[in-house]
Length: 263
Ligand code: SF4
Image (cartoon, rainbow, N blue to C red; front, side, top):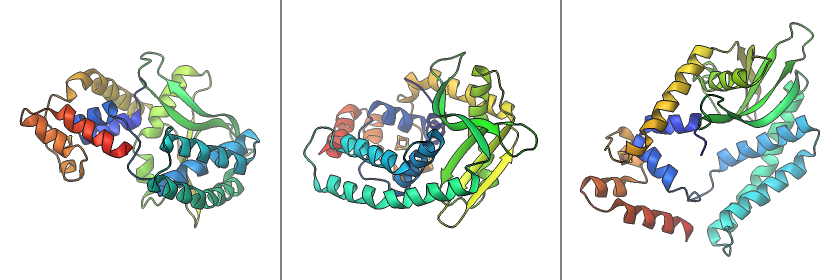
């Protein structure tokens, strides 16, 4: 099992919630349209970088998604709705990708896309970065890590400061001879495409990698400890969690949650 930056985010929110989610991974209750639009836009941009057909790539990804939702079961009304939604967002995703390619498609000579980066020192840790390559602006040659985001971010500089991209840059540098010298964070919205860039801050990436290693070490005991938090008010595991604290059988409640979602 590979633990990633998003595991750390969830662990920081609540270690027990993270452990429950990891153990009881089942299809989501409903399709997150904004997230899926972003996934499809990523797929289309990747297809562009690979020289492939973006519309065909989106269609393939939708089929995979529907198969995931149905998982061998006959379609329910929720699945039919999911299908309808995916087809609706596919066009929006394609338009986002086209906008991105027009703005920045030629600025990097892309070497690789969407790879899994595994930490050479701890193969349990890693992540997926969007792309890396060499800047192609005719000026200084930089080795660039590209991260794409879709959605509205009120402060993109703040998004860049999250350290997620430094985390990927660190993993990249451990694996490749060409170290990342610049991070491009590209945000695509229907209105505009924005790029913020800076050199990687590797000490920030190292801090996050160490924190993730600690979280993984503590994972076996994460379910044991109650963790009272603001996140409780919208936690889907609230009932299981309180049952456990009352020395009841939280596994029964967790099975019920999983079963309900599959019905
Ligand atoms: S109810 Fe609260 S403490 Fe329990 S798992 Fe959820 S967020 Fe964590």
